[in-house]
Length: 608
Image (cartoon, rainbow, N blue to C red; front, side):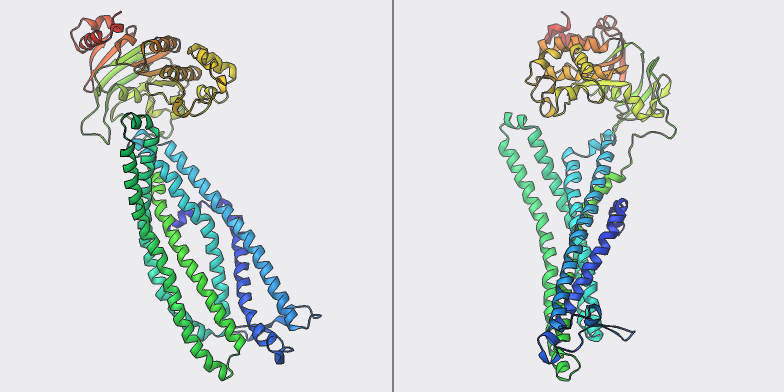
């Protein structure tokens, strides 16, 4: 109930629409009850000429001894019983149809709107999660929860909620009919309901568990699909189409096995209700023969009772199915609520201040860090490094030394486990996140571009930038030449992750994007590591434009890119092993000299 209440909380904004839909569905239930009541007059008056002139009794109000006749609610000018009954039937069905249409529309409006709000809340929560979250959750699984899990909730909160209201009020209306006709007989007839409802509740709990397993299997299938499509070049280069096909087939079969128990459990309620309903009808027919013979009950009254009872079993049967679908939605909601409830590890402290401008330095003060999901041991241990405003500081060292991790602490992609990172003397954890990251531009080795136009990719982060500003950034990044050769120039769609561009072109667009942002602090994470010699020369020239008048932290394996750095920090096993300029380190006989000699043998660009 707590989970259901939490889902329904998202409909509070649309309470007016919801209450109106409830009122309309109540009218539908009342109309359904009146439909059953009108069966009696048809048998007792319309089809019995001897009783054609007698008043038509609709129902008796229990406890008040008050009887309501159809003649009381029809105009006095209408005396013909069949005319009264016919007009009543048409009026009831017209009211029922209109109320059902508008009630169904309104409840679907509430359901779709509430789940749209919920999906937006989940997306925004996931979007603001820290790097630890994305290490623990694959993209495919998160996408499956936001789309597939919420689709189950969508169905329950719109179509099924509408049907639940319709069937609930219909059941209440028909229950009123059978109770006022013969309440003792009604109580006896309804004693079979516990034999149906108790197993249904137990089945519902199983369905919730089954649904969660099925949704997890669907997430795995979605993950394989996302990986196979995103990495299609790798798949083709290794001739692994059959491998991926088998992986997909195996997970698809597992998903089928997870879904079939739900189908079996869901289908069990209907035959239970129908069997017990048949037992009830046999007993009623036996009882009715005696009642009609003794004159206690007329044929029409009994017919109304039986039809109302039969009609009542249909809402009960539908409600058990609806209950199971709600259980399915609650099972799907578990992962969604896990995302909403997860505490963000990277968040602003109360009273965080805005960094007005960057003027002095970035200081790594005895920084210690380790990954929570990684093996024991610190990736960084006691790192102390100062990057003064306007300096170019390079981080080099073997793979796994902690270079990228150290740079990622500046924009607070991670938080330190010990020590502090300070900008102009302020701990970055005391600064507003948006203000901090506004001061930092990043160009990484794996450039991410959106499936959008060239102009929108360059202007990403500055939606109000004018076309001339975008063009100037592209020119300074040495990108305009190839942009103008594209079919639609700056309006060309570049494909997913910039697939229509070469590596050098993608990097230059990333540099143009950073130029347009115009942040005073720049992080270059091996920005030229995947480029050929010609592309690297172009990108290096563009980077020189980007680095001008900025404070730069450069991460590089290729030492040719950092010869002119003001300071080079050599990291090894999470510590700074050496520090100095290229000239100071080249002949020191340490790690830097060894790396330089190894690259000199492989790449003459290191020492031209």
